[in-house]
Amino acid sequence: MILVIIIDMRDETMLQRALGSGWGIVLPGFIVAVLALADLSINAWRGVIVLGLLLTPVMLYHNRLRHFVLLPSGVALVGGMMLMLLNVKMIM
Image 1: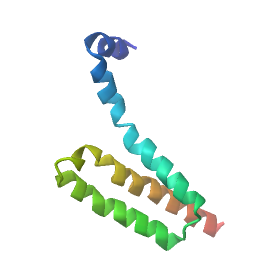
Image 2: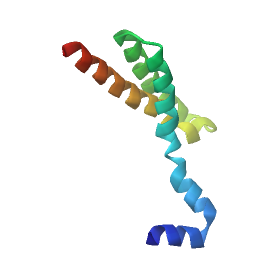
Image 3: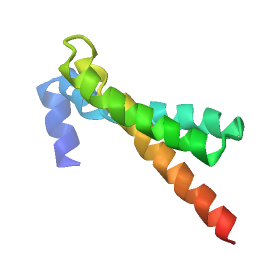
């Protein structure tokens, strides 16, 4: 609560910066949820993870895309969680 008061008193843009990183996982989670509706195979999920992992360093070294580096890594993370869920579903 004290942190919220300090951020509010200091500057509103500081609060926006603190909440900005949340979009790095919310948006990829939404993208993976849409892909989950497409009923992808395990190999397709592996491809999504590899693509996300390969795009992360490319975006890191690009001047304009550097600010969005959490998007492909978030897709890889959430895609990995979906792949684990598919493996658990196949075992049971």
